[in-house]
Image (cartoon, rainbow, N blue to C red; front, side, top):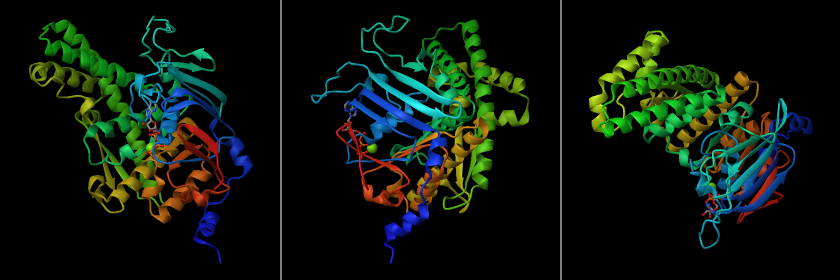
Length: 409
Ligand SMILES: Nc1ncnc2c1ncn2[C@@H]1O[C@H](COP(=O)(O)OP(=O)(O)OP(=O)(O)O)[C@@H](O)[C@H]1O
Ligand SMILES: [Mg+2]
C-alpha cells in the first residue's frame, strides 16, 4: 500500500527537464550584506524552490531580496537602510547591501543588480551620500529608475502579513491592486508616483496656509491628469483580472473583484477628459476642507478593491481565515495567468508560508499548479515534511542563520 505521502507525490507529478529549460526564473542569485545574509549564492536551473528552516532563519528575507527585482520597497515595504545587515550587537554595518540575479526570460537571460551604496560612497551621480536611493543595474548598465525593472520581469508575492488584507483598511488592498496593474502595465508605477507627489505637495501648501492659487492649480492639474490615468489603468486591469478569476476552476474558490472609487465611477459615465475636469474642479472646491484634514477628500488615493467569495456569495472579509487565504491564492494565480497572457511572460511567484494554512486537498492542488507552471515559484515553510509531495519536482533548500544549503527531503 502507498503511504499518504507517496500517494500525494504521484498526484503532483514531476516536471521534466525540458520544462525546466523553458521555464522563466532565477538561475543565479547573490546576496551581499542583505538582512541576515552576509553573503549567499544560489546557482541552478529555474526550478520550483522549496525553502525551509526554523523561525528567524532567513526565509522571508530571501523572498524579500527576490521581491526587490521589481520596483518599490519589496514585500515588507522596508526602507532601504533597514535592509543593511546588522551585526550581532544590532549595529548597522553600513556596508550597503546588494542583490544580484540572473533571470532566464523569454527574451534571454537578463542580469539585474540592485542595492544601496554605503554611506559616503558618493556612487550616486546626484552626489547622494547617504544611499537613500535604490541603485538598479540591468545587464551591467545603470537604469534611470526602478520602472525599468517592471519592464523586464514580473514578480508577485503572498506573505503572512497579507492574511488580514480583506479585514483591514483599504491601503493594503490599494497597494496590491497597483502591483497587479503594474504587472500588466509597467508605466503605472510612474503615474502613481507623480500623482502621490503632487498630492503630498498640495497637502503641504494647504497645511502651511500658502494660498497660492496658481501653484495649487498646477498641482491639481497634475493630480487630475495622473489621477484619472491611474483610475483608468486600474479599471482596465481589475476588469481583466475579474474575468480570469471568474473563469478559474479547480480547488481554489472563484473570486469576483470590483473597484470602488469616485474617479473610477466617473470613467464609467464620461470620457476621460471630462473626468479629469471633474477631478480638477472637485480638488479646487475642497481646498478649504482639505486644509483642515491634511489630505484630499477625493481622488484615486481613496479607492478600494471589493472582493467576493463567488462560490459562497459572501464578501471576502467575512469568509473564514482559510477561505480568505485560498481566495488570495486564487487571485494571485489568476493575476499570474493574466500577466502571462498580456505580457507573454508569466511572473515569478514568491509564496511565504502559504502551505501550512491550507487543507490537504488545496495544498496538493497548489503544489501541482506550481510544479507545472512555466515560471519559477519560491515557496517557504518551517516544516519540510509538508513539502514531501514535491520530492522530485522541486529543489529543496534549507536555511539557518542566513546560510543556505541544498537538502534532501
Ligand atoms: N537588517 C537586518 N540585519 C540582520 N538581521 C536581520 C535584519 N533584519 C532582520 N534580521 C533578522 O533576520 C532573521 C531572519 O528573518 P526572517 O524574517 O527571514 O526569518 P524567517 O526564516 O522568515 O522566520 P519565520 O519562520 O519566523 O517567518 C531574523 O532573526 C531577523 O531578526
Ligand atoms: Mg518568515
